[in-house]
Image (tube, rainbow, N blue to C red; front, top):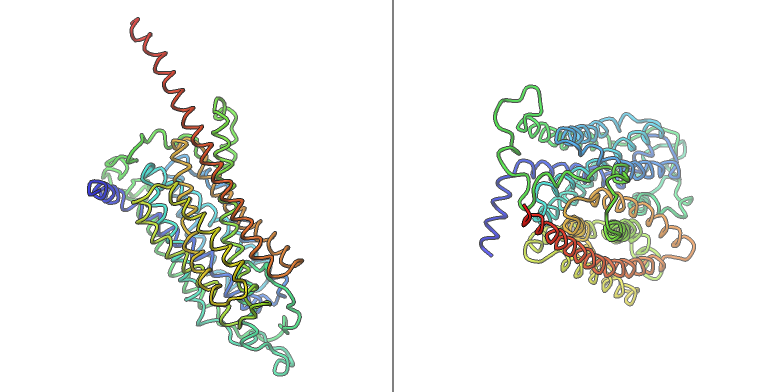
Length: 499
């Protein structure tokens, strides 16, 4: 056990600069993904738009995040292109933060969020790819830490924004004193819009003006976040300098020339196959692959489609569920549920850094997915208990937090880092987060708030069934791979004897 400890630390020391850079890039990702929900009402005032119009900004960010995830693999061909893409995307995020206060029209804000979403998608794919290629067999621990930094960024962003949010109506109309929305009404709307605006229902009772004097101070929050994010592109630029990828770089040996690229596998294998979804569909590269190779990609993507969809749906609709019958929780109390959920996910990823070192990915995934089902079933049973909703939210966040990094490390390990697993899995997760949330929102709108827990529970059962099928297929795949290796060795023996 001590030997493994030393080996992990040795790997970390060898690749510390690359690792810390990729972790900081994911902090930038988290910072960008969490700011829109709390600030959306102030942005509505800034752009003089209605709530229905401002929700298209959520769609713009989510859609282009999905597009960026699919295109991110295009920059994987060389280290220069990967780092250049990361530098550009993190810088774009800072520029978008700085530019948002200047967007006084809804179309300009939607374009800005589309740019930010695309940058986030590229970051998501490239950072995962680079870390998997760097550590390969030992990547599970470092992937858990990578995804912890998303949660850290997502926690920092609302904390920065909170002091600058308008307490009352931020557009003063002609008769604002008589009809303006109260502070509690605005808090209710902010919490309802936490899930990318898809939980908006019955909002006509809140008088929100589109014309008048804007009195919001949210601009300061965006400028502060732009400054907080600036060290991230600087860190990527520093790594490029040490890798001798800049014209002004010194003649010192490159980091990846001094050290082996991977802890377990040859570097040459790691670059094969990875790319964008379009490169993955190259028939020449897919020819001769067994059927299990494609099934593993599909099942891995489907599992993350479900689990990331559950995360998005739960974060988006737990507030709506809490303030609706039979719970009828207070707006301020219910507003804490979303923060507790994301804090639990962040804490869970921190804890799973150690657990990934002690236990294998299949065990962690089994524990996590079974835990998710148990929590969902208990939430259905105790659906009238406000206390258990808080407990269940906390435990659900802890259980589901490690599924993405563990699934990514496990799938890449099965495929010997030669498939398109990272690109497929990242894109599937982004798709699930967007699509499943819309579907759950539609069901809640037609069937009532109780359907929220039912949808999440059904999704959890589907996820576990897909994982069991995944375990069976990976067993068949490894058996076929072993048999083909033995046959190849037997064919080579007579040739060696003849020579």
